[in-house]
Length: 116
Image (cartoon, rainbow, N blue to C red):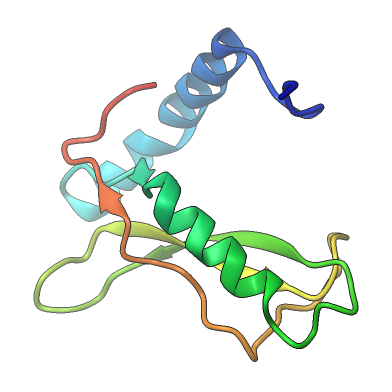
């Protein structure tokens, strides 16, 4: 299998993550009074199951995508950041979300955050 066409190098990934930490993490930590989560882990099997769920949906007549949203918990257990993956009904920036399918969440949050 060949590499995806839109891959980035490890060095680019490290630089992008460093940029995020330098330009956002400090402000978030000051606003919250503590460090926040900033990396999330899903198993390959969880991701494949989610992709299979999307592919099996009746709306497969259109090309579908997955939009990743930043989010935050607001409950007795956590106020930390999270992400969720939402199916879309297309692959452009303006493609609507597919609200007939459920988003994916509940990955593992690295805490304290692990730098890339």
